[in-house]
Image 1: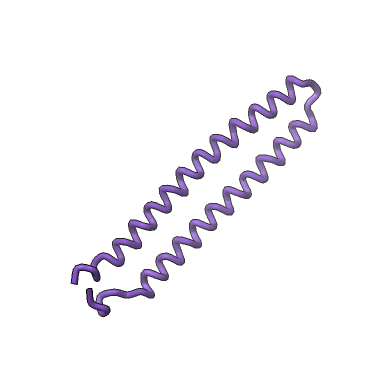
Image 2: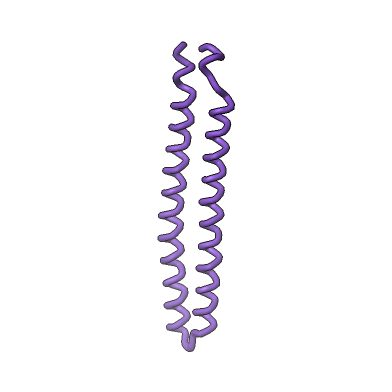
Length: 96
């Protein structure tokens, strides 16, 4: 490996951008979670019977599970892609 072929500032920039994008996606997931909780609280407040409450709870749990499953899968894939991209930016300098 030669230091001429390795550009740490490029790798750091790529890593910083990936971290910023990942953080943005995680914050978006948090916002979705808060909005979902507020919608659930509204439905519970409007419930007129135990059946209405049970339906609101079931819907909220199902939607939360689906959202988190999809979001965590997307975040995991983004993380894998970011690591692969960072690895590829470093790899050319390792063979010298």
